[in-house]
Image (cartoon, rainbow, N blue to C red; front, side, top):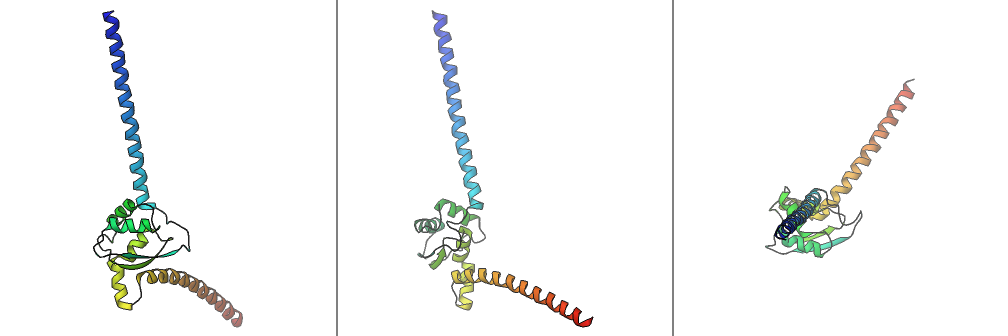
Length: 170
């Protein structure tokens, strides 16, 4: 009986160690998966909605940090996760340059776009020409589209002019 009791205790001990190791592996796997997912989202989080989105006015109070701003944007429905916004701001070229003020942001903007609009670098441009950062951001997007269209029209006109010149020369 004594040997059977020792054998049973030994087997139970082995099973308990195996169970503890199995639980630890499961939790480590989940932690690694969540860390990977969060890291992936830092660099690839899509906007809340597709173009044209909804314009939302946001006021950032004086003394707000990136986490506070992230909470404001999350509550207004502009971002999904304030912690993700905090990390994106820390890793961006605009780290520490977010300025207080009232901004018109859009649900089709990425967090990076919003950070750029609210940064001090954008504010310097606002002082020079008097337009707001958000207006400037949307103007830049439409100007880019227009310039591409203008380039296309100019190329078509140049091709037509060349064909006309060749026809007149023959």
